[in-house]
Length: 202
Image 1: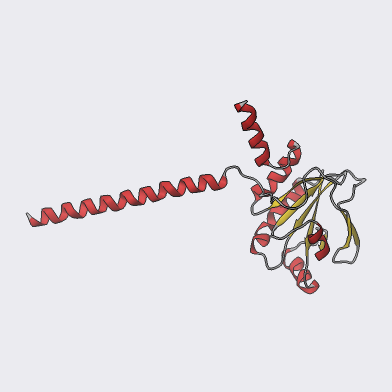
Image 2 (image 1 turned 135 degrees about the horizontal axis):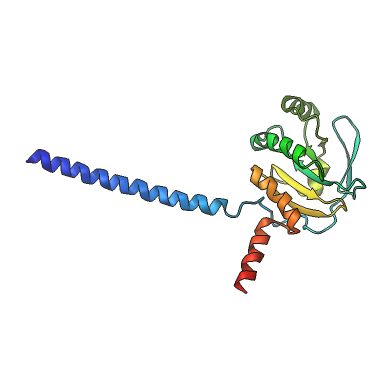
């Protein structure tokens, strides 16, 4: 008789533990849903405004060739300036995405990588990750001009030199959200979704 009571108690304890695990999982699903909706690059409140002329700056790449960033372009290409660092693990994880985007978006986009710090470290970073096909700029002034204080960060500038999107980039989805924001003519996908929601409610 006592064995039956013990087994029943054990079953009830296991059931209670299982219920707690299920509740914890449901809560985590809710948290993840909040974090990934909407998907898009995080636009910081301070800094340059989308729709304004981007500051134009002449900088030198690793081969000491001059590169004009932010100025209107005669070739009709937009410019994505991606701020990275050799010591940033997220930046390194995004490099395959940038290489893929460089190929898939080459008809309308040039990707420029930008960083600051020791030139030897930058050259080692470029060689280690096969980034020779990208224009690679080492300039603290460029980061300050575009008010970059977190990495990886990107600014997208249209052929007329107008800033059309910007934000923190932590994933492929974040990067592609900048491209989609440009195609939609909005500052960010968050703005687009909020405007859509307001229009539906009106």
